[in-house]
Amino acid sequence: MRALTVVPEQQGSLQIGTVPDPVPADGELLVRGLALGVCGTDKEIARGEYGWAPPGRERLVLGHESLGQVIHPAGDFAEGDLVVGVVRRPDPVPCGACAAGEFDMCRNGRYTERGIKEIDGYGSELWTVEADYAVRLDPRLRDVGMLMEPTTVVAKAWEQIQRVGDRAWFEPKRVLVTGAGPIGLLGALLGVQRGLEVHVLDRVTDGPKPRLVEALGATYHHDSIEKVLSALEPDIVLEATGVGSLVFDAMAGTGPYGIVCLTGVSPTGRNLTVDAGTINREIVLENNAVIGSVNANLRHYRAAADALGRADLDWLGGLITRRVPLGKAAEAFEAGDDDVKVVLDLEH
Image (cartoon, rainbow, N blue to C red; front, side, top):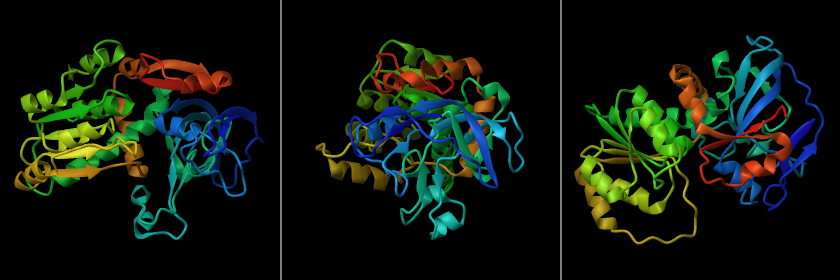
């Protein structure tokens, strides 16, 4: 079968190759791959920045934003079910968090991840997954179900925001999402579903992003973050860009008892001058909180499936701005001017 593979930490190694068809073990599903979302993590691995091949192997099958259809069932799955595969697996020791099913909070770093760290991903025409790490999707989501994994990221982020807020009386009204990429837009979707007044900040002034925000019933901004924060004084900032200046501005720009949740990963090696004293003063005197959130466990996959099931299908479809056949996968790793989410079609 065909698969999208890389040699981790080797730039220019991305290729479509032939690998053996997988054979499901006891308790595993055999799945026909339908589509694969391409994200910044995939591009970083393709650039040779990181990634880990399975032990004893040179190449890693890439891809973690999966969508497939069951061919050989296991557990309570049936043939034909639409499924996604969970990305992370708990470490084998395990640490206390992994033992409790909170493997997204692994304490010792010995976890593994499909398509990223020591386990092949879902970027192939066929793949297997343990029934315990597969999640069934509503058949109506066949065209957009690869959005499940990024939705789990923001489902977890919103859960963490709620948990931090619940340390005292918490009745947020307004959220600012920084960044109108897939994570930001899906985070805005979940904010709207929570009944919040949602604002989204991005630098572009045209193209699909402003339209997608407005179609949610949210408000789109492209002014400076200082101006937007001053006008809104949001209760919550969901930061989805990883841009250092936005991160630090957000820390000092919420209303009292504000929460900043960081989901964007910043590049290293870039210096930034900040007024650390003012930021510290604001956080302490206003009882503000800054938290980081990454990955997801099974609870967040279930929450994401529910959120997608309640979303407008046309709106979700609007997030997918390009569909690229597997045979031309390299094109999916090249940025387009109006890209939001690029998807690989694994059937062509």
